[in-house]
View 1 (cartoon, rainbow, N blue to C red):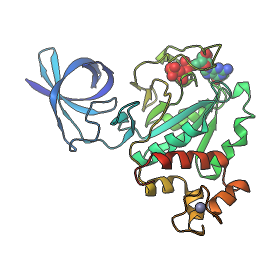
View 2 (view 1 turned 90 degrees about the vertical axis):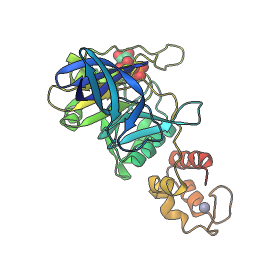
View 3 (view 1 turned 135 degrees about the horizontal axis):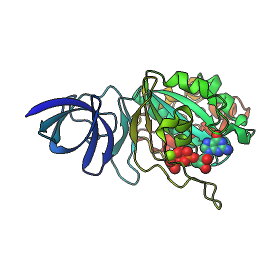
Length: 301
Ligand SMILES: Nc1nc2c(ncn2[C@@H]2O[C@H](COP(=O)(O)OP(=O)(O)OP(=O)(O)O)[C@@H](O)[C@H]2O)c(=O)[nH]1
Ligand SMILES: [Mg+2]
Ligand SMILES: [Zn+2]
């Protein structure tokens, strides 16, 4: 029996694909895993996890999971538990389309909060700029003012891909965003060797068809790793506290102290400085809507 170290590159039901050195193995997982960092909120193996595999001849079984450096969480859709999207990534490229499928600011704001909670750098990436992005430009600069990096790219024409490549080099990057935004297309554009399957948009809804079905960790030829993920329909945040939310919406939190009532809900109270700033266009109304919606879902909101 021999113990080897590897990284989970994909999950296939009960089987796990693990990279061990130059080799890719398909192995099973022990039911009772040794979580070296302590059992996490979502005690399931995910792409990016570092694991110890017990080998007996050709057969391998994962016995231990190393402590995670980072883990991007969301609420599992329709369930009251956390779901890890990927472990040990350094940054996330939040990919949205310039026109279709229509970018939802609410989804972007949720991604940004989740990345912040996970300590992962978030890079807003607007793909398909070859189709024009007048509508998005109404609110994109808000994010640049907040200090986020916003990339405007086109997988089709190659516009802006140099900046993407530079960001990816030597790091582990998660590509996430709605179906049809062009995550797989972008990855193929930065490295054609991936040969990822790309889907079309539905003619009736303008949405993607969930072409990518499993998250996969892939090495880049110039150093670094990327994770392509299936498109996300929704993004429930996993138990953010009110304080964490306020930190994620600093332009709102910094004004809240000046409201007349210290416990102002920023909904209907008189002399609410937050609402005044929204009405005056100083706080972006989309950001305000996101903040209020997420706050409603938090236990102490
Ligand atoms: N015009 C234009 N179309 C693009 C661009 N990038 C991708 N597309 C198209 O967008 C559609 C969806 O692309 P995918 O790469 O499959 O999108 P995805 O985000 O990986 O989608 P899922 O795997 O379903 O989550 C395809 O028809 C692509 O050809 C671009 O830069 N410009
Ligand atoms: Mg895809
Ligand atoms: Zn207020």
